[in-house]
Image (cartoon, rainbow, N blue to C red; front, side):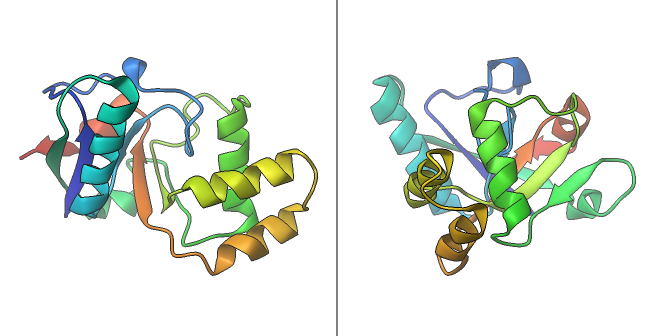
Length: 157
């Protein structure tokens, strides 16, 4: 399968240590199946940093790794209490077991999701209300590669 990464600076080697912490699924290398989504992320990154040019990198990924025993993979099939709590904890920087997963797949927490997460953080809504608010939202999937072993499964095209 093809996966896409939007960036403002082209590179050949993926360095997990320069990936930003406190993102949806933790500090990792994020990709999507949707080329346009990657382009929009690249444009957003350029606007935020005021540097570079929007670039979409393309990678081949053998999706059998998602079900193999060689990597520890977590897949969120959609919005759920577990997904919301996972994102909430990561965005707050709560410590998880070191490299609990190699790859995490699930919905992107966009600005609308972030707004709902903030309501939850302020205890204005419960986790159940949070999930209910997000259940009917159309969210695209993202793939987060969290370890060197996971990164090794990606082949730049």
